[in-house]
Structure formats: C-alpha cells, structure tokens
Amino acid sequence: MARSGNKRLGRLPLPRLLQFGVASGSLAPLLVSATALVLISVLAVSVGSVKIPLTEVFASLSRGLMGTTDGVQDTIVWQVRVPRVLLAAVVGSALALAGAGYQGVFRNPLADPYLLGASSGAAFGAASIKVLGASVPLLARIGVPVSAFGCALLAVVLVIALARQGPRVPLTNLILAGAVLGSVFTAATSFVMLSDPERATGVLSWLLGSFGTASWTKLAAVTPFVGVALVAISTASRALNLLQLGEKQAAQLGLPVEAFKYGLIAVATLATAAAVSVAGIIGFVGLLVPHAVRLAFGPDHRLLVPLAAVLGAAFLVAADLAARTVIAPAELPIGVITALIGGPFFLYLLRRGRAL
Amino acid sequence: MSLRAEALSFSYGERPVLREVAFVLEAGELVGVVGPNGAGKSTLIDLLTRVRAPGSGRVSLDGVPLSKLSRLELARKIAVVPQAVSLPHAFSVGDIVMMGRTPHLGFLAPESDEDREIVGAAMRTTDVWEFRDRLVGNLSGGERQRVAFARALAQQPRYLLLDEPTAHLDLRYQVEVLRYARDATRRGLGALLVLHDLNLCARVCDRVVVLSEGVVVANGLPRTVVSEQLLKQVYGPDVRVLDALDPDGHPIVLPTV
Image 1 (tube, rainbow over the protein chains, first blue to last red):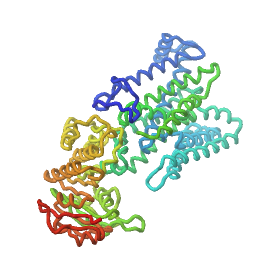
Image 2: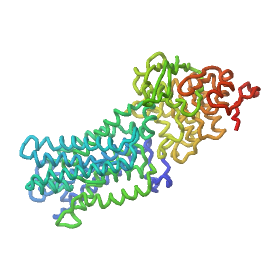
Image 3: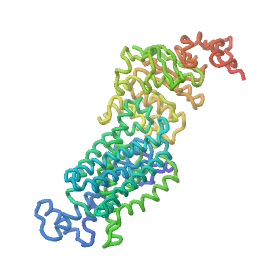
Image 4: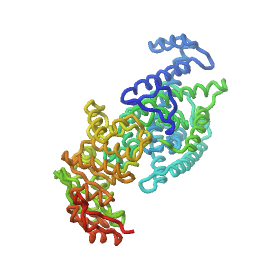
C-alpha cells in the first residue's frame, strides 16, 4: 500500500520514490540503507592517518579473507580498520535496536538506552569488573558483559519503578528518573575508578566511548548478543505495532502484554549492555536513529526495526570516521560527535512535542 | 453458544465497581448495556475480555471458562470496538484494520491473500475502503469509528463488544455504527453494546441490561425495561418516559431540564 506523506504529522517531504508502504516495498529502503552502510564502511577503512586508496583496500580485504595478509598496509586494513569499522557498525546497530525497542514498548519516542539509565548502569557494571575484577582472569573475560547486563537491567527496572504512576509511566517522570539514576550510576562509576588510579586511565578512555582499541576479539564478544537482539526485536515487530494501540487494545487483539513488555525490555537492555561493555557510553544513537526512521518512513516496526539496525550501524561508522579525522592525529571521543548531533535533535523533539 | 457472566464482582481497592453481575449474551443477539457514568459498564467489558481479572465469579465463552483460553484464542472469539479516539495517528487505515488479523496470524506469519481479502471486505462493510492508504490522524471521529469497527470485523469474532461506539459521533454516524452492529448480529454474532443514549438503545437492541452502582437492576425487553419508574430510580428524577410509543413501537425517553 502506498503511504501518503503528511506534513501535519511531520513526515519528511520525501520524493515519491522513497515513500514506501510495508506491504509492497519495504525492501527498497532497506536496500538503499544497506548500500549506504557498505559505502560508508569502505570509505572508513580507506580514510585515516595512512590514506589507503580504494583499490588497495579491496586488495587487502581479499587477502584478509583468504588469510594471506602481507605487509604493513594489510595489517592496518585487516587488524586495525576493519575490526574498528565493524565494531562501530555492530555497536551502532545495538544501540539503535535498543532505542527502537524501548521507544516501542514505552510508546514514547524519547525513550532511549541513555535517557533510561541503561547505559550508565551498564557502564557501572562493566567498570566495576574492569577495575576491581581485572586481576581475576575468568572474571575479566566473562564478568564484564554479565555485570554490565545485570546493572543495566537494575537501572531500567529502578527508573520504571520510580517513574511509574499507577499503570502509566509519564514522560517527564521517565526522563527525570532516568537522568537522576544515570547520574547516580555515573558517580558510582567514578568512585570505583578512583579506587584504582592505575587502571583508571584505561577505563576512562573506554568509558568516554571510543573504538580506538577495537579488535576481532571484542567484535566476537559483542556480536552474538547484538545478533540475538536483532532477531528478537525484529520478530517482535508485529507485537510492537499492536502495542502502539495501547495496552488494553493490544491485549484484546491477542497480545500477552506484560510478558511481552518485560521480555522486550530485557532484550533491549541486553543489546545496550553488550554495546557499552565494548565501547563505553555513546549517547543519543538509540534516540536519534529510530526516531529519524519513524519520521521518514512511519511507525510500522516491521520496517522501523531493521532500518534502525542498518542506519544505526551506518551512523556510528560515520561518527567514528569523524571522531578520528576532524582533529587528526588526535581523536575525539565518539560520544562527543553523537552528542553534538543528537543533543540539538533531542531538544528539537522536546520543543516540537510528540506527534507520533 | 453464549458469552456468560456468572456472579461477577470487581473492586478497585476498597471501592466495589461490580457486584454479583450475571447475564448471558447469546449468538445472534444484540444486548444493550446502559447505566449512569461510573455504573461499571467499561469495567464489565474489561472483565469480559480478561483485561482485568474479576475479584470473584467467572466468565465463560461457549462453555469454556475465560481463564482457560490464551490471549490469542480469546481474541479469535471476542472483538472489541473501542472508543474511536484511541487509535494511533501515524498508522494507515489499512495497517490498523490488518491488525485485526493478528489473532489468526499470530505474531510471525506473513499476511496471506486471504487475510487481505477479509480485511478488504471488512473495510468495505464499514465504508472505509477508500481511506485505506490514509493516516488515521487525518480522519474525522466518525471515520475513525468505522475503522475501529472494520478492525473488529476483520477479527472474525463470534462476539462483538462495543464500548460507547457512538460517543462523539453525529446522528448520521451513530445510526451507521448501530446498523453495522445490527447487521453483524443478523449474521449470527452476539453483540454487547454499551450505550448512553437510551432511545437509540431501546430502538436497536433485542434486550437491555441496566447497570446501576455495579448491580444489574433490570434485564429484559427494551419496552419493559425502559420505564419511567426504573429510569428515575437509576438516573434520578429528571427523566420522563412518554406514555405513547413512537411510530415503530419503541418507548421515548426525554430529559426534563
């Protein structure tokens, strides 16, 4: 079904070609987004302190795939840039998926991993293990994501409990509770870091959000969790659509509302914790990406969820590219870039009120 | 074949909302539920769809206790037409009506041509087919009510529960919506109609249940239930029922302001 663009509801005035209904043409925007992701990723591998021409990039990539890397250039491409770009993509996907999930469940376009306190909770959980448990080998490997997930879940549950008024979770309460609890967890994180100044520097650079230490190992650690989140939240698309009718109507159309909500919050929090445990706190991706997709393509989660995953990846790859090039040879924390873009966008949404 | 409430009681905290409510909705029957604001009409619909659990008593659907059915099984048998204001604005009309197929599709199966046919037929029945690509936010209240009705029909239920489906609608749309309900019962569905307008209710319903302070105070033919004595008891003294019937043989209720 063709979807008519609508100015009153704030749809972007897209050219006719880009206005797709889900029934007929959800593949086209997905293909366009995926192509954009591939292009920006290849560019991000090519650009850096050492410029590598595109033809060389492809040559190194194919040698890497064959397992016959040779020389400095191949090492830069295959051991430094490719894992970095892929990690940024996976983390971007995770945060955008988490944002899409939270926004869908709370029926609130301003919900995101950062504002709900999930990121700060995950950071506290991960930092605690990185600092206090680093001397215990097994704990250092497995403990970080587990502790990040546990603390993130605790943060989200606390925020919802604090914000709740009867069955409703009002927007202002949610944002206030998220901000306050986020601050408490951030303070607790600082406290933990100060207890071991030697490790603090390394932990701080992780916490601020950076892909500078990306590696295949980190990529392998985070990807399965994000894969689970992608499958789970994509399969929940129709249920998320029903939930937009309100909990009562969703239940009357067959959705077991409570179980679904808690399950989806858990999955979104898992994606957040996985992202934070490898890349620190990167704000606004989870807010900005799903929201922009909703503005452009409408509220149908069957399109929104996969598009958010792809565009979240593309956005963070681009942001990381900017973070390591604008003040080269130094690097900006990537959170600086996402906050500079996402902060004003958030304020714009607040001013505009919620139309969706 | 019936939807049966037996001794249903429900309270919000200490405040009782429904007390020992019992009635039967048979297949093919259109039953009106009237009563003052706060009489427990909407709570009754919540209990009949298990959105809330009764404090005591039970609901059975074609002989099966409601508590034995899954949400999807329940939604295949009972559809609710909510007040039309409560539809999300940014979905298209077609998307909303297709949501009515969820009980049959589950949450993963893709929509089949059969589903699209059923949805199309439902939209044609309530005359919203030409709006199928429009966003709900751009429709009038009456149009949205017809969309909500189409969604309930797309559920292909055995029982329809209508929660003040004519609220906020002008006379023409009120008549239309009640006609859809009447047509549905002629096709064998049972329909429960929560309504404030006593005249409309008396005209269209086979039977009227009067709720007052959570208690069923009357349950019977419109002509016998809609009496001045009963209405004064339920709504207070400012109501009159004319001695004469209207040309179609229905009682006429007037407020005395």
